[in-house]
Length: 223
Image (spheres, rainbow, N blue to C red):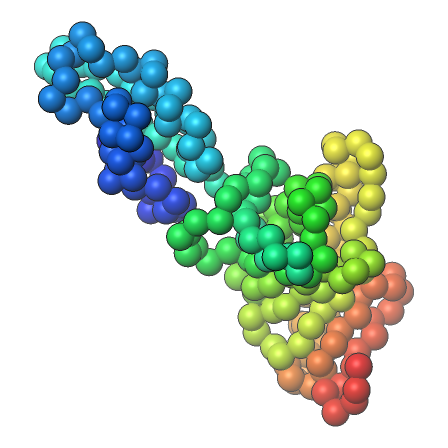
């Protein structure tokens, strides 16, 4: 059993694959080769919520080879309505599991539709940058769908405003990518030319919602 990206994703391992096949009486060990249906094994494994691709074949020396790839989670959703799940790089929902990788967590007012249509492309835009992938640890969605960012460095929250909305997925994904890229570039410049001089903990809230200005709340002030 070869799980190609086991160290990267970590959702499933060989023991879990064995248990799944045994449960469906498909584990090949001790069976005659003629009784092993590789197609059924593949279809059974593909039904797992965490399997992206599955290939099973037999060799002339009596070996049964199973090769898997896993779905790639990009963000964990923990909504105020109690939902707790992942969204993968194909904008599809994955169930909660023992997965412990260091993913961005999105909290707040998030429906499943909003998660797949908006939070997913938002997370993709963040993950494309080494800087922001390492700097941003949490997203928070307010009731009006304003997006707040919680960074790892600096004791402050960043408001980047509301994401663009389009019915067409292609236009929506591109608009979100462009919008997030623009807002994060504004934030980068503010970090370089503002916080580096004023101090990382001077402000508790940084508002980038408006195009031509950045509004900051000092830590001593009430938000």
